[in-house]
Structures are given as structure tokens and as C-alpha cells.
Length: 274
Image 1: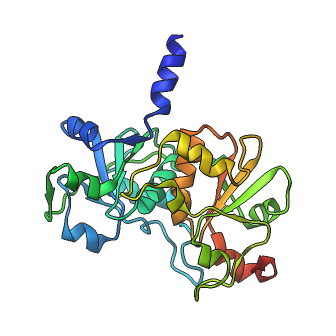
Image 2 (image 1 turned 135 degrees about the vertical axis):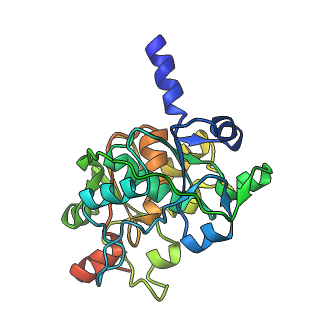
């Protein structure tokens, strides 16, 4: 019974409320990460938070959004003062898509205690908590990465998942992108279904309740027995689905195809359909 109680408690600890983060501010092991663009951080951020933009780990190159190596990601984190042993809270100034991106990469790299601030900076402001324009910097640390390769798949595996009966390929972009009606998109990877990440959020940017989230997936035939592969343009909008499916609802086979539409349309255009 004790073990079950502990697990239940951990199960609910993927997000943190404004009230609970306020109580934790004096924890010397706490690192608060602002995951939005640096320009937003410079306007206003949670007092004491550091800036680590969602695209900090992106390679430069023709295909936008591909990640640098695991070792390079760990080096960037260490230079920012982040260790895998920290208690880490991530937030952004928008709808948590950037926070969830950093969250999923931290989990992939082996950080154990990572949470998202539910509702982000807007919820923090609504709670009348301290914000500032003054940047914070931490002393350099060492981030010892132990990547969980089971969380990621490459392009060929993602493309193969589309037609499989025992898999679901979820396109987390907007319906317009999915249907090829937006300028930046010719369509979707063959066999994908569309559940935009925004479907997981309430109107004020908070995550929906567990029961509501379960309904979102059940309505699209996303069940725990299937392998689930998530993609967007370049990984950013997969993070909230990853957090909800794997870490909140306990789906056992959830993977991110990080190259996403951008890589697939460049390298396998014949697999893109409208």
C-alpha cells in the first residue's frame, strides 16, 4: 500500500502549481528555467529564473530544428548551471509548448526531477508573484547525461508507424498545417492523425484535467496497447503530448520523432500526403 501511495504521489508531480512553486523558492537545489525566446525573458520573467530558450539545442543547417548531439546538449545545460540532480521547473510566456519542449529533452537526457509550471508566466502573474527584467545566471555545473533512447525514433521508424495497425502517428501541428493548407506545409506524413497540442489545454493555458485528457485521446483511438509516435515541424509541439501521455496518463510506448515534418518533407517527400 505504501508503494502505491508513493507512486500515486509521483504520478501527479509532472506539473507544479504557482502556490507550490512559491513554497519551493528557497530550495537551494531548485532551478527555474524560462524556455521561451530570449526576447520574452528580457521583457519580464520569474524572479531568479534563468533563460534557456526552447531552440537552444538546435543545429544550424538547411533543415530547421534538428538537435545537436546528446553530449553537446549536456554541455549547454552544464554551462547554464544545470545538473541532472537539480529540482527543475520549466515555464514559458505562451501556452507551455516551449516549456514542454525543454521538459521532454531534460527527461530524455536523464534529469529525474523535472516539472512544468502549470499555466506558465501568465498564471504566475495572475497569482501576483514576483517578476523582474533583471537576468539571473548560475555558476557552471556538470550535467551527466544518461539518454533514454527509447523516447526517440528516427525518420524511417516514424514513417513506418503511420500505416501500422498497432501504432498511432500523431501530428501535433495545427489542422491547417496537417491538411497542407498553410504556406509552410504541403501536408502530413502518410497515415498520421491530427491532435493539435492546444487540445490538451484549457482556454487560460492550464492543462486539462486527467479525465478530459483521456477523452481527447480516446476520441481519436489512441490506446495504451499501441506504439505512439509524436511529431510536429521540429519537435517543439510534441512536448505537451509527451508529458501528458507518458508521464501523466501512463502510456508505456510513447516516442518523439524529433526531425518531424521538416526532415520528412526534405528527405522523403513521397511520404507526405494531403
